[in-house]
Length: 173
Image (cartoon, one colour):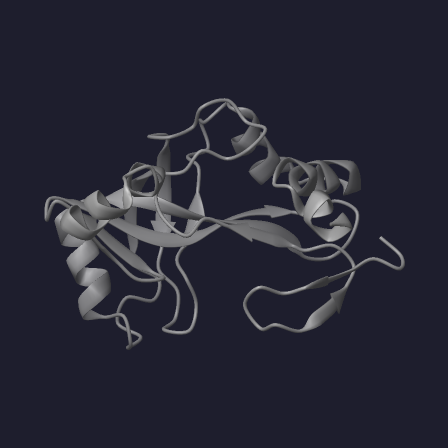
């Protein structure tokens, strides 16, 4: 979008164009807990989360290629995984051992503008130690977000994602 700029929440710098990602700080299940319940039951940082020492989550990127320009739009979402996957990721977080390894999980966030997708199956591919895991839907998934991931999104769809997340309302304030 010509003339449009935004301030990145991660680096704090102003960038030209529209944001190309939107993230969730916690899995919905944890986000919905009261302040005290979060303290009592959950442990989290920017990449890993545990609830009641028995439910485990990793944060990754669910990316959708653009059809109108180079690049992609990425949803920074959480996936619920089994303990083995969580612990393996934790143990190899700062090395390259996990790169290229794959696992399965289930989406743990509601994404604005889509039908309920929490618990939808995801395929997880771990990246290098400087990158979050990549999340993809199985090729048989038929919901709109899976189609967007396979077919890409145009400018109007990209703009719609940002509207649904409140980006333009925030920038107009």
